[in-house]
Length: 196
Image 1: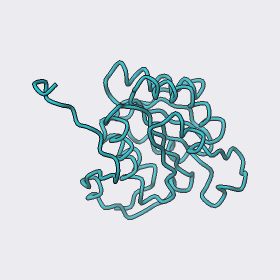
Image 2 (image 1 turned 30 degrees about the vertical axis):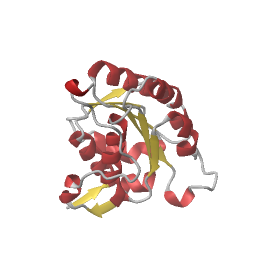
Image 3 (image 1 turned 90 degrees about the vertical axis):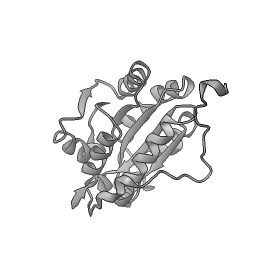
Image 4 (image 1 turned 45 degrees about the vertical axis):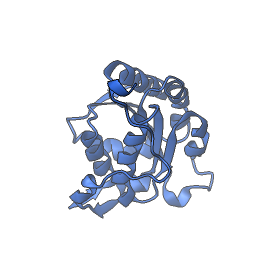
């Protein structure tokens, strides 16, 4: 089945149990936002500033026990998420932030609103990703939610270039069934009460 990157992201969010997404649209994340409207299972809460999206995702995670999700565009949109991500990191709240990025060919060229958000968020996230291929989206999102929830919970950022969101691929539904396997990442599992 042919799917766009935006469709894969939305399908992955639903598979991870996401019901609410906090965000503010902008140029570099428009392909994902254009798709989001076709998924009534995902309720979008429009914020007035991206910092509010990350703080709302943090609060939602704490209040619901589920992973909070926020979205923002590249550049200042993405950097505005940092305060909420830092708060989630300090207080162990599982949050997944999805940011738009300039197209792959423009990365590293000081393009309009290009920011190295993966580099900028290293100190305030458990892990972050720059997804350079539409074929990697499903596995990346599954890994991100696994990392956000496991061990000491915390935020994970997924930066997706605009052309990766808009890219179309032949998608194999078996991708959803692949287990998460991360070399070097094996957080302790929850012990039985009698073992504590």
